[in-house]
Image (cartoon, rainbow, N blue to C red; front, side):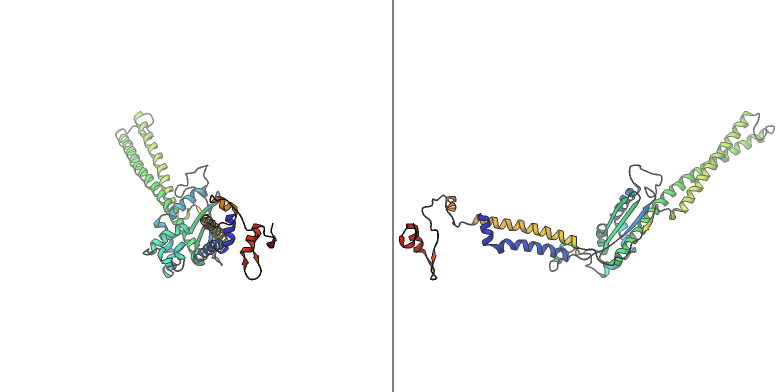
Amino acid sequence: MRFLETVFRHRIIAILPIVLGLVLACGYELAQPRAYSTSASLWINSNVPGNQQTTNQYVDPSTQQQSILRELLTTRTFALAVGHNGPLAGYLSGHPHSDVKGLAALPGIGALFGATGKTLDDRIASDLPTDVTISAPGPQVVTITVQQPSASVAAGTTSEVIKQYQNQVIAAIKANDQVSVNYYGTLVAQGQRTLQDAEQALTQYLDTHRNVPANGAGDPTATQLVQSADLAQRDYDTQLQQYQQSKLNLANAGNQSGFQVIDGPITPSAPVSRVKQLLGAGIAGLLVGIVVSLLIISAMTAMDRAVRRPSDLKRLGLDTTAGISQFRNDGRGLDVNAGIRQLRGDPLSGGT
């Protein structure tokens, strides 16, 4: 009861924190820079870039490449490649405060929270991972969503993320194919020496045993040398074929990115709607304001020592001796004596 009385006696104090919380929360959200968003979708053909033979039946191809792309976005080298080869770096250079968010975006106090001394590369490396969202809506589909302060920058940055990711995938495939080329090249060289040694041994034996036919028939030693030469020839041919295939794979690595773009980025015509953000900020500010208002009213109620009813006296450890139920107001002010006569039962007052 006393709490409600305090609320009604101090309506402004009770309402002011709620209004301020709502206004400040919505104002904070409105002070944030507008953002433009666009998306692109990739169809994934392989599980792991550079390791197409590596498959996992429990993990979708899109999930694997989603994880790889997320890891790349956290690296400074990849972020700077996207920023400087796309339109992001040029836009940030011409708009030094376009990427300011949070408390730094508030007018008047933004300088207290701004990131002073950050270079262009630092801004790109820190902002890009938060501006790009990677999702996998299907087992072979990866969606790249980019938010930027400009519509053209959003579309250009999305295209550049895809391009740089393709470069990374192709580089990984080339590195893998180069390992194969080096490996089979070594085997071919060894096989060629083995074949030459086997043919030379057979030739020398036949030169010293001219009565032995070229196929070694009838001579165990010659037969063994012929078989060794044939085996060396087959091994060499197999290794040479693998070596040539690995070289062909390396030459075609540029066309083996492991994915294809099925939905390219489109330049957005309008910024991202902030209705949901404003609604969330308003609810949050309203709740905070209500909590602050309850705390203030509770503190004022606890500090209130005024006595308005007999129960208030009992709360203070006092007993009620008498009470005045009403005062008479005849237009000349309150007549306290009339209330006292009513308390004593004076007939003139009409009391009992």
